[in-house]
Structures are given as C-alpha cells and as structure tokens.
Image (tube, rainbow, N blue to C red; front, side):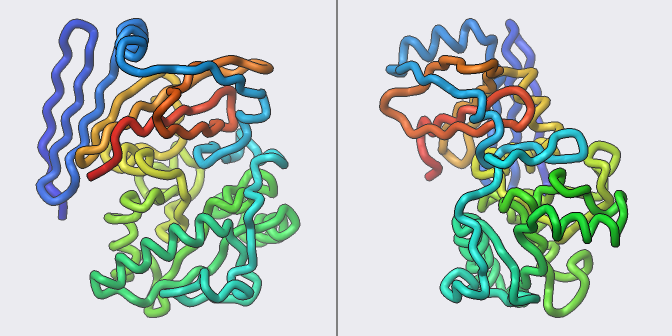
Length: 292
C-alpha cells in the first residue's frame, strides 16, 4: 500500500504541488501564470510556429470519448490489426477470442507492461476485447445497456486505444493481475478508465478490466492527482500550462483552443507531441528532459 506525503504552497500567484511517494517515483507539478510562463519560454527555448488544422482536435492519444463527445472517423487508429494473426504482438498473455483487434502501437505498449508484471511473478493476463467497430458496439450496447456500455461511436473501444484485460484465474476485480494493473499501469502510459469512485463523472460503473492508453507523463499525473480523463481535460483547460517533474524527467504540458486553422508555438529542438482533446483544442506535451 502506498503512503504519500503532501505539501501545498501558494505564493505570489504560483501554486506548487509537491507529491513525494515513499516507494514510487517523485512527482512535482508546477502551475504558472501564463504570462510569466511565456516569458520564461522565450528566454530558454527556441520556438517555431506550427499551424494546427481543426481536424487535429480529433486525433491523438488524449481524446476524451464518452456519451457527450463521440468518436470521429479521423480519431480511429490507422494501425489496428488482428492480434491473433500477429503472433509476435501477443506475447505474455492469452487472447480470449480469435477476432480481437487493437492498435499495433498499443499492443507493443501492453506487451511491455505485461513483461514487467511477469518479473513480479504475474503471468495470467488475458485480453478479452480490444478495438470494436460501430456495428459490434451497437450489439454490445443493446445487450448490456447504458450502465455498462456506451452507444456506438461513443465508446473508447471504437478508437483502438482501449482494451479489456482479464485474468485466466479469476475475476479481474479479485485477481492479483487486477491489483497490479491498478498500481502500475500508469508507468506504461495506461490508466484505469472507469474506477469505482468516479462513476458519477464517467457515467460508467466500475470496470477494473478496462484500461486506456493516454501516454506518459499524462498517466502519471492522472494517477497522482486521482483524475479520470474528464477531470484531467478540464484541469488542463483551466490551467493552460503546467510543468511536471517525474522521476527526474521534466515535461511541459499546454492546452490550446483551436478554431479553424490556428498557429501555435512549439519548440524547435525538443521532442513534442500534439493530441486533440476531442472537444475544442489540442494538448502539446514537450519532453524537456527524459525520465532517468
């Protein structure tokens, strides 16, 4: 069981949240005044302008998909493959079905996570469901109802970024594999999308088997702040820009509203990623220094 130490300092318009775990990587999150943050960036990082098309709102790993925000055609991963037909992707776990599809990139990330779990003595993982097209989602919605499923076009399974994970030994909510996922998935860019204490926000009952890829460092921040994706998107929209230090790595995360074609500043010499939020803007993640 993790124990946490918290220190909150508010001073001169700067909020500094320090979260120090005893047995996990250290996470620090800084919330800066936008004007001060812009001045700092201009003085330390060379930037270039990049034009963002409105379609970018609907592309990327951070898309919020729920009953309010549907999947757009351009949101669906283009690298979805049948895992049964790609043996090299399905290592370290079993497939409960011969027609389970998933993004090839996400399959690699999941295999990396399962390999880490195996080092901890866990080796009974299974994938029960991955990518679903709208027709398959429609059948599931009719069978399960709105408490346990979303209508076609409103499920993360329609993206290719989500999968249902089980244990071959017992129900995921009781299995050691489920506990391991709950505690460690964030290290590999995954989140538990529908936790028990957030049903009033997600509108979906607790699903300890449903994981969603959002990428690192977002998974770490969401884990430390106990956010589901709805809360995280709202948080970034309110803060505009945050800086996070995670285990020695430094990341800058910024929200930009997008209307038609919009020009934003991005670093010229640093790695960055852009993801839409599927609502009204994009999230730019700058990898200022990598995790050590």
